[in-house]
Amino acid sequence: MSDDERATSDDGRVRAHVHVTGRVQGVFYRASTRDAARERGVDGWVRNLDDGRVEAVFEGAEDAVEAMVEWCETGSPAASVEGVDVTSEAPEGITGFEIRR
Image (cartoon, rainbow, N blue to C red; front, side, top):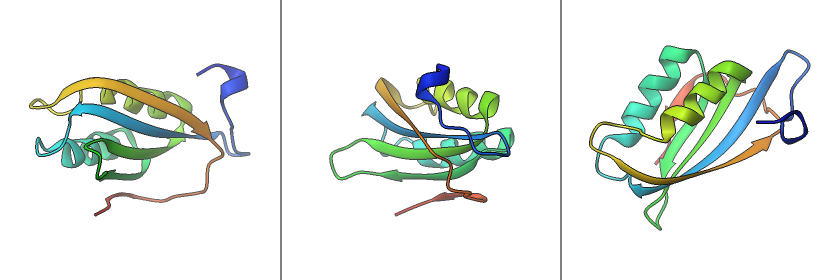
């Protein structure tokens, strides 16, 4: 993310809102995303969308959030990712990481 694309909070946190397309549902993508985010100390959530995409929000240190966005390009071992759309947003102070239904 470039400086003009990024919104950073006073404590240095950034937020990325991600939409992932491809074969990303029914392949443990959400659980793998949660595990990867927790390993990197990233807060947020992930959920399946009715149109077959996966949506996720990541908040945390810039390098950790960027690592999660990069991780999304491959995802879980059974996934076949076709695209990752990322929007930078102002952090909201999310704590923890959850799978939303």
